[in-house]
Amino acid sequence: MLKAMLLEPERVWDLAPLLESCGWDDQAHVAGAGGSLAELGLVNQTESRKKIWRLASEGQAAAENGLLEQRIWDWLSQQEGQVGMKELQASDVVEKRESGAGIGLLKDLGIQLERGQFVVPSSTGAITATLEMRAKFISQLSESNGNGVQENDLDSSQIDYFTARKGIITSSEEVTRTWKLTTEGRAVKDSALEERLLVADITPELLQGEEWRSADFKPYDVTREAPTPQVGKSHPMQALIERIRAIFLEMGFTEIDGNYVTTAGWNMDALFIPQDHPAREMQDTFYLDKPKSVPLPSERTQQWADVHESGGETGSTGWGGEFSSEISQKGMLRTHTTVNTVRHLEENPDKPCRVFSIGRVFRKESIDRTHLPEFHQIEGIIMEPGASLPMLVTTLKEFYTKMGYPEVRVRPAYFPYTEPSMEVEVKWRGQWLELGGAGIFRPEVTEPLGVKWPVCAWGMGLERLAMLVLGLDDIRQLYISDLEWLSQQPVL
Image (cartoon, rainbow, N blue to C red; front, side, top):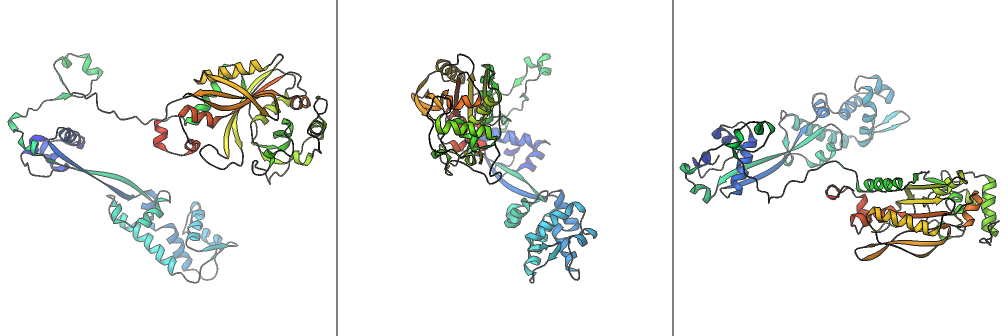
């Protein structure tokens, strides 16, 4: 390539003459050689990019037969009196599969369908002008004979419109490069140039023979940055969920699940949360209109009423006041996954278990760097004879150690449904971070369910753990479709 360019040292070369002068038929040879010469400072390489738009399959059909909305409008303009969907489908203007899309396009133009009849506005000038602009755009692309039209030569508003319609137009990016010798390149003597074949790829076939011993190999610069391969992988949140699931299963736990929609009874009353607790207010809880209430067995609500009002047979004095079964039956989105474990205890009151769940929960939180209205919780319980606080602490320490955080501590805390209660903290970058709560379910929770053994319980926020694992300071980053950030995340 350098030999060819030295024949006309002042010329600005582009692809076609270089292919001809070098006797090549593959433009990749020119691009590769030009890049190498540019790195050596022998040529100046310029590069320009342009976006080319062409008609896609539906666009080509529109160029031949007219746009769907144009065909319907032409037919509608020729009709006398009121016509509607029935007449349109009976005509040969559209195919059956096009009827629905055609009606939507007409509505965008201001033509309504009322009681099956088309209603055309009194002034149709805007409709005609819009259709003419669209037809002109399609015609402009059609006249390029498949070569396409540069984006700068097209109406940007029409590009935006037809991009939103499937199969009408498609785009590609074309790169144009030119090369010109530098002062150093022009100073090279043609007689000093030697043409040699360099082996760039080491193949099994090459190594099987002896030719490689005398071959010249293209040198590799191991200090240059290599391209990062873009491969498919799980989203960091999903990968973290799978990792947590694998750890709990490895520790002998069984996974359970539950519904997003529940009742205030199972979400709060069963956990001995008083009915006048601030967490029940509308600013914290998503109550539903459908279903506004969900029937509960009267026996169950009576058990909760006894516990809340007087403590029932648990030895507690309860919260006092009057318990409302109507409040218990309110439909809502669960505010924690503890409702899953409580329902599991109700169904298996005398069967020892070690279970966990990972699921979405919903609260009326203001969105900021540490809060979301929809997030995930990790929940677990151990219910068996001899279950105790030391067993709970050991279990949590083992979990966080397997997650890569061996330094774990607990400190006293308060939760309405556990006693004793504690908060769990791990050490990260020299600081203690609180990641969840734990404790032993109170008798007010377990005895109405028929449970006779102690129940160790814990819950933690998955997003907060994800921020720790991924080194984030803004929880919203987990749910932004930032492809560059996602591609840089490690495989968990």
